[in-house]
Image (tube, rainbow, N blue to C red; front, side, top):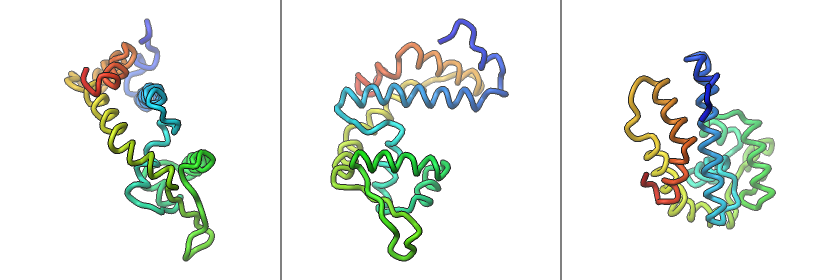
Length: 163
């Protein structure tokens, strides 16, 4: 990782920053692996795809609530996914001001493949890299950061979730 990790030196004060850094590292590794699987959807957009497999169609506001993220962020993801042909958006049936988001055929095909191939593998790799972490939360985060930096997550992804 780092010879001297400034964020780690801040203790709980930088907890959010360290968690965000870990999230970005997990997304980057997942993205790199997904590209080797000929998947062109961004790993950061996979939760949107997953949400739309449960609720389809759904409003942008409902999608933001499902994912627990701000609506402008969801709107940006939806716009990108719409450009890629994964989703379509249209005015709601009862309230034309509300945009309803739905998977396209292309998006549904990817969702089926992701459910069968990608998500179980990513879940297993994340579980493997998180396995047997000792200590308090900050110590566990530090260990997880070291495992990520050493390539353990990527190795687990390539090996089918085993590490």
